[in-house]
Image 1 (cartoon, rainbow, N blue to C red):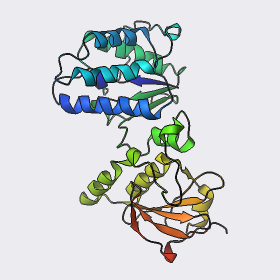
Image 2 (image 1 turned 135 degrees about the vertical axis):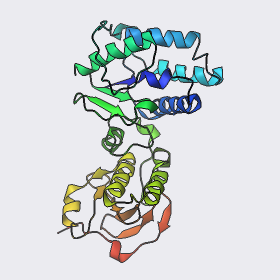
Image 3 (image 1 turned 135 degrees about the horizontal axis):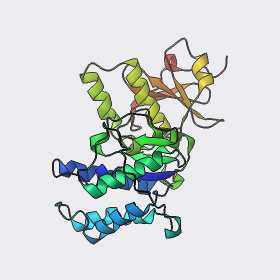
Image 4 (image 1 turned 60 degrees about the horizontal axis):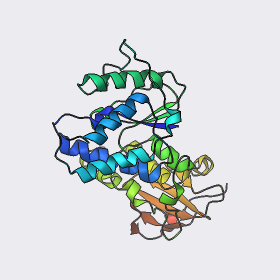
Length: 292
């Protein structure tokens, strides 16, 4: 698997530039901290990086220190120069009309060429979308995985990676304990805000609360437990467990948007926020079955 950055992340118009730049930094910091994956190194990406290093987004007002930090973190996660992929210039349009691109000939050319490479399906790609493309949701190839927002996406491929522990820097992820069952607050920092927005907009539905709870469970390393979910089907529950011999189970609260935590025997230990804050203590009527 390799990482590709949407050129919209790095080269953007002056409109709303502050938010664009802040999100670029957030994405690069996220990749640098959590993902044990290298960027897809292509000759045209190298050319664009050299341009950035020489005059790193000089038309924008952010400090050179921050810009150079971003560039440095990208360079640190590149393969050796022997692994450079030389992109073929593709004249015909490969980029879908609905995909927003930068209005610059060299960036359009790179986007078109890299899109052709990704669409061929020979490389497994984790493609981080720019803010202008966060609502873009067309499936191209099985091996092409789109990331809409590193901290706000629901049902995300990133969540699946954290759940399985694949290509994740394990030293950056805190392992859950009974005392602290949802310890990775940084990875889930914006989901309570999304929960509030759902409620205020009349969208506090079972489906939305399930999606929120699933994302939080996955980002803390839990896996969906189909067996326990099935034997607890008298209530609308989804159960997530920590490993095959789990000492902790999560049950998603579909009424208020929270996470119920149970021990290995299914005894309820409390209700927690998405950031791992204890909201309410143990309740017997919130126990789950762990055996038929």
